[in-house]
Length: 444
Image (cartoon, rainbow, N blue to C red; front, top):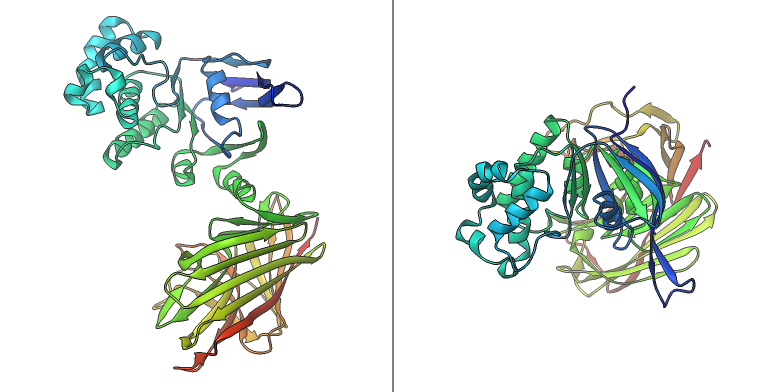
């Protein structure tokens, strides 16, 4: 039977804090998990979630307050831009000392020294004291040493957040080599693209505890839920993350990519929320209001989300236009993830195509388009969510559509679309462009 290479049971770390009501602050608590040889774990979470504390404990830089862990194998850690290096020693001397601490003999270090220095790209700077190094230079030194050791477990804390692109590519190649050799990796980063590229498993820490574990994609979806302001009622939650709003049912992200968003077309150019500067937001128990304005259009916008029932969310989109504003098209999009397999509109019920394909001249494949007062929906069934998402509109003009994206986006989309006549300007003033309802009907 395959035994874990790292076993963690009820691990916790607290610090004395006079300002805390209990006199201590728990940076990490009740962490238990098994990690196996060859697994690549991303460790994600907000600042202060306990990520670095966990890696320091496993690297034995600090001692736990409670719990225990066992590690079977040789560990190489790169923490906090070169923790363990001495600032008064030269880069060369630090390599000799740190290499010895990693279990390399002095002869092994000297045999590999030129390769390590060449990999680092530090040149003559390797003979300078470490206090003269930038943060990027320290990472170069630390990772260059790691590249020429033979660890069983590699622990990395935000080491790719600095350094130029060429050096980052070198680091990727080393990590890929380690993975082929079956090295276990724990990698902390705030860059979800890096986590997706490197890791096949992920853990989400929140307030010092594990909130979710699983495949990288699923846990990153959970992370999006805690990233911004939002509202929640029973099993349904809306979170404003970056420029877009994401919709959740429990810990399942119903939307993906741009989530719930609007786009306007003016002067033959589509303007999505990437062109919006969000000015402020207001969040209460069951209401979220987002106010913003377009960078290159004389338009401001207001999105209002509110719960009217346990399973229904109202979404209203207002625009305030300046005189002489021209809009050709306006869209409201609900980008559902690819777990949604079936769609329904009026008396039509069909399966989405298995493959996402490019259509000539189109990024999207429309399966159905019809009256704005219709009810359109999509259904999903997997281990996290079984149910249906419905979109309806109270608008009397415009149309609703059911769409599949291109392979690039891999989403199913419920859409409201409104078009204007060519050269028809929108009168100055504030208008309710969309008044819709989103219902989440769960089978569980």
